[in-house]
Picture 1 (cartoon, each protein chain N blue to C red):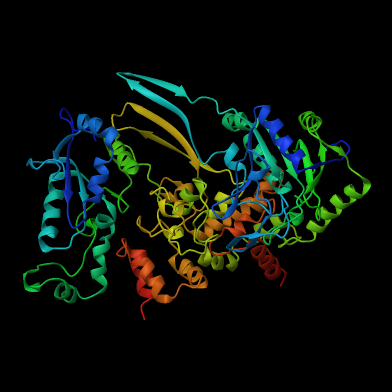
Picture 2 (picture 1 turned 90 degrees about the horizontal axis):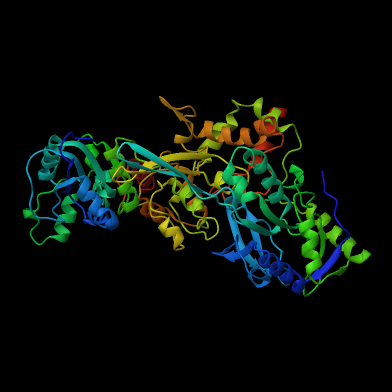
Length: 372
Length: 260
């Protein structure tokens, strides 16, 4: 499914800065890629100067390194260390507080976290991940809905995939097809950078109207399309093209799971960086006086013992069972539950696994061994 | 922990330690008055020098057992205490002084003291739980004041403390930190260490030193293999596991596996 977009326009870096300025004037908080702590992080930005201009990243299993490009591209790198999920589904939040006075208990909801958020430079895999979290959380979580409702998305068609990317085999990228207000494609070999841009919503059109632009030429549109096609051929990884749910659910007792458990640290990094993992736990606490009580929600991980604990202990007693739960939910039971795969091929679980466990390699091994 | 008509009586005990965890209790400044209103602080040598004899509803214990006298004293403390909570790496893992467990204590005393014959000490430094039953162990070197407040609040309310036993990575990532191991190739014990400190060292671009001891399912063997591929040699890996929580089972076993 893709959205109708208007005729392609071209903007330069000054036009891109105007876009950010216009969004800020409309009251949006701007969040986009920026260099922080030796990585590309998604954080508050104010102008094009805050973007990782001229930077790229090198990603491999358990490996991330920032590197200089030999041009001044604004979007010449792959996905950042953390996804956008923390802006809609924060790692920690108070749900309500209560105060006990004598024999009465007064419960107070927290103020609404509603926000106007503009996400800048969002890749196709991130947009797919946001759509997946929308499917899971929008209906049942009023806090998510409040944070998500007023979002402007300036997408970027990915022209620089990383070494752990596999969005093509998850049918999630590199071309954005839906879920954005404007979509930019950075034209390679142009210095200073220029962007082919298309609006897809009324907000996107308003934005384009407010900034300096000109119609794209046939050649520019062709160059943009070629850059994205080229990116599709540059995926660092590939998910095996097989029926993944069937492969996983038919191999629940495969010895590969035990081998994986020996390597897996059960540290939970993969679930933290995954843009679709949404699991949380709830903690009720009281203060020293016993009068102030609060309920907080925080990110949890299926790799912790507590996560699957019921009376008598954890129903998933070890790392083997917990890793299997994560992978089978993500790839096999998620479609049944939510109608899509839970994986978008961003590669973060591979890059940020301290021991470099590669989800695509594990699936490929399972497929190979199952075929024998 | 309702104790009937009287305010619950709190005692703070010190064994072999640096006093840092007791100071964490004093660092709960905004809550000290509430604490004093809620509990009768009956014995706390770091604050007041007047011991009160009798029984205690809650004993908070800092330090490890490293002398024969202390091994006796902790039994007496346990007998006087309804609840006993241990604080910090010394009390929960033996502390940095548990390095003696890996060597001959006589050589240490001979090297350090002019008259080693006067020193009466045990061959090992061990956690409180190795001597008496413990109701809750709060990790850290030192403990985190926020977690300490949470444990005391929970005990007073008769609920379970919200002190997760999962890895530091979950806390580190929740705080939005960059992985110093993956992005910085820095040796980090975070994946095998329990959360709770607020990921202080990764926040300063340093690897985790493991002050909070092993997480609930520490896969030290797999981490050691990853550290080796970073170029960390056997001796450096051994030393990484052998610091403030060297005596904790998982770290002890892994460091011994690295001995020649």
